[in-house]
Image (cartoon, rainbow, N blue to C red):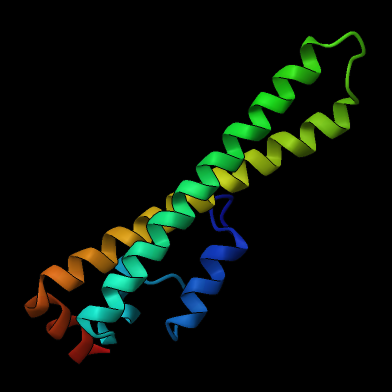
Length: 117
């Protein structure tokens, strides 16, 4: 598994009917424009939530490091790894949102890709 390929990325690929990563979320080309619009909105909200969580974890780490007692290095490592996974999920949600909006706004491209699946 690629270090940027989180369980979210794997799940999105599987939900689109692919066992391997598919460029530009081609599986969503089967969706109606209304469904693509809904997917875009939901993915944007999830991307923002991931970014908020990552920023919160970083602020918590900063607060812990500024305190009187040093936090356990193993715990800091786990939090840092979680921040990395959360930021990778943020990017994946943004990509999904961008792809949904693109297919919604370019029905000819959507039809060509969908026909090839």
